[in-house]
Image 1 (cartoon, rainbow, N blue to C red):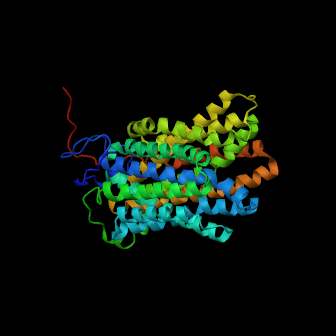
Image 2: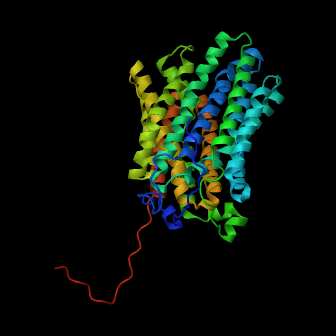
Image 3: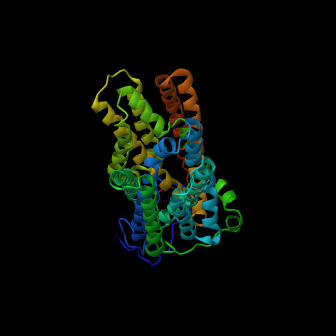
Length: 440
């Protein structure tokens, strides 16, 4: 574990540079040391790793626990799954706004992580659907509160030109936790007599450890506070929405999110396509997570060099290729399964942290949390709508036809996103009345 450096460094990045993500921060600014990955980013990555171990332990056993142990109907489980995946999107704006209104990103993130940690032991005593729904809603509320402030701290802790690398390192550490969580839950279920209760108890202890790491090792301020403009101090959301760069990024994220099929549907389609046994189904997310873990940092570095918005769009081409492989009549093979999962993980590695880095470039530090929350909320809401639409299309048309329609929509939304994120034409310099000099 790396201890975060508590010394603050001034943020001298001009706002105009943050509106042009592909050109901002290529070299370290004067007076700063060039640090590959700041200690604050590593500390936040450790917090996310530990917390994801805790969350994925619960997520791995929750479907079986609710249906087999508590006897919930598929409809009841569907409602709870909607709560689990949809609530966080509704409160991200609250978390971003609170972090920009004087509470500070660390305080808001600490509240979010703490709320989620408190919810894990409550699953031991919640047995009815209303109580379980309330606990899951509170847990996802904590996730929604902490996401934007955490990403704001990451963006403020590093040089603008290294944000892609920093977010890649964080997402890689986060994904490592997602890989370890199901494995830990599997071992506990095999070894402990208490079964599910033992998983929930250990998950609560691990979540508390993540809160402790955040409290002790993440600095309260990752940069010297800036003086916000009057309108930003009073209404950060209004100040963010006035920025064309944020509006373009949000529009692009929403368009692409509307054609991004949820992970569960993609795994179900792959399972049917290859006729995999149910025993192998829980391992499919591990394939995506492994590719994400391996590629998050390299693609973050690529984003810093070629442009974050460009890589974000290219990442959706990997998702389009995964759709194409599932729709095309290529036969059943283990190689096809591995290739689809590798493309799926590549999609996340090229888009998840890269979008956060691109958003940070377009938003000044005084309203960074709100700006990140606006883009993330738009994307999450669009993906939720896509899940509902894809489920209805699957019911009516079948899985392959529905996925083919999603692929066609992804082609159109990627083209539209390319137009939205097209750089503005450079303004011609003012003409000079002096005669042009002649080169010798």
